[in-house]
Length: 292
Image (cartoon, rainbow, N blue to C red; front, side, top):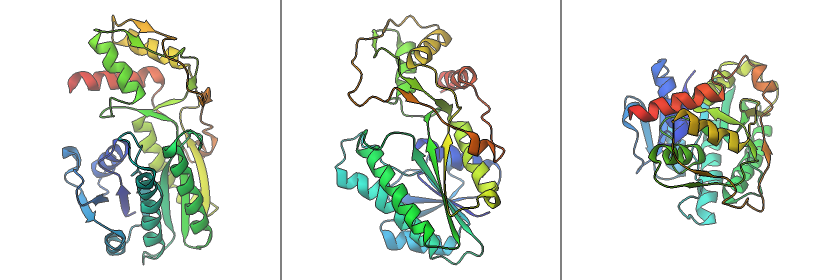
């Protein structure tokens, strides 16, 4: 199978690229002209683009059987809504339309890194949902294109952004120089190690023949949802931290989702199962963080 991957400079994309390279797949990485590729995926082939025409030329030249789409903007740098629409909606549609109009033989597969977040939570969640709706519409008009949206729960793992929740808590517990202010921590979240998310993408790609509809959606998580407080206390214990945990010091968001947990039945039907539970996954992250 010939893979094309978007978003290889990001957290998830980097891990997918590394796994594909390690097993000898030699994926083509589609990247902006200005993107910096992580050093550990340097052996991969990279196709640079600056506009939709560049995207189309790269995809038509490579003729991928499968696109794994992880590129996105979270809006953490105060990007305008139009910028989020461009990255999270328009770019993905440009890639998908180029794949649909390409000349690869056989059915073509587009696997999207979606989100379990409710669409009205913020601009990121809204634009991610809008892309899925547009992509599903496109896939239903084609007889040779399948679209799979993987609704990702809360990922964590090595090389993640330390501004995200797990990384933030881990850094605070390691520094032990100031109290860590938190909400009550009663929210329940399904935290999944990034290596298990990578294997979910590959399970879908390798079992495409089991996808019997042009559009599919699957949850990606462990199927378990401990409270945020339990997760924080586990990190605190595993790091032997002296940081003071101040639960209840921060208010919950007005739109706070109190339960987010994956239904993994469809993925398990493809033979996938997560290899990490929360304890082993957090220990892997802590060990990796210590070695960096």
